[in-house]
Amino acid sequence: QHYQNLGAHTAQVEVQPIIDSTNSELMRRIAAKQILESGTVIVAEMQQAGRGRRGRVWQSPFGANLYYSYYWRLDDGLQAAMGMSIAVGLAVFDTLKALYKLEIQLKWPNDIYLNNEKLAGVLVELDGQPQGPCQLVIGIGINLQMPDSFSQHIDQAWTDLSQHTKQIDKNQLVAYLTYYLEQRLAQYSQTGLNDMYQQWNSLNVFAGQYVELNTGHRSWGGICEGIDANGGIRIRQDGEVKSYYGGEISLRKA
Ligand code: BTN
Image (cartoon, rainbow, N blue to C red; front, side, top):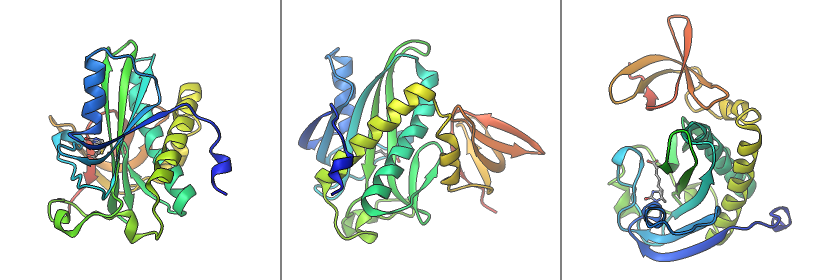
């Protein structure tokens, strides 16, 4: 009964048994100047070199989880890419809510948490000019049923979908995720984050908490006030709120 809501979409989904990384595969095709249609999706059963943000390894055992990458061409350059990360987090929210009635939280820009444990991650990579058209690869990894032997390699609190829901159908998950991604990306191209940033703020895992933003060069501490309409993270320091567009936020340790 769910499917009647999915509508028609144009994405082509390619399934690979084993690959180094679904993101790397799309980036290679971009580098080789292959013509790709927006909405091309690659899913793998296993990744031998799964990648997380900031050069981290993404544990990708066979059959256990979802490894998904979506190709999208963007005409307005990198500025638009920041806000788009926000739209991607919301598409994952829509999917898990529609299928399993789960309410995830989001960590800026697009990490996915359930009860303070990491459930999924997003790695957006791009090829292009800061002001011109660019090509994006939106990689999404969702933990479905992580084998015990892998859990020891994950250096933070994590969870998987099998701990929160009984039936997980990977095909259905791919179909829904693709549908909601297309909805959110279309919404983003039409109205930016205008109709999205408040919803994102209601899901902000660090709302009102003391956080540290680390850009690699510097770090700033302050109260997390959510995002602005461009997708920047707003941090209050000494009574003044500033937006930041890069870096990583974490809870400030006491
Ligand atoms: C993170 O939280 O650090 C981002 C993790 C992104 C993992 C996905 S799995 C599919 C795609 N291919 C990769 O190598 N990484 C992304």
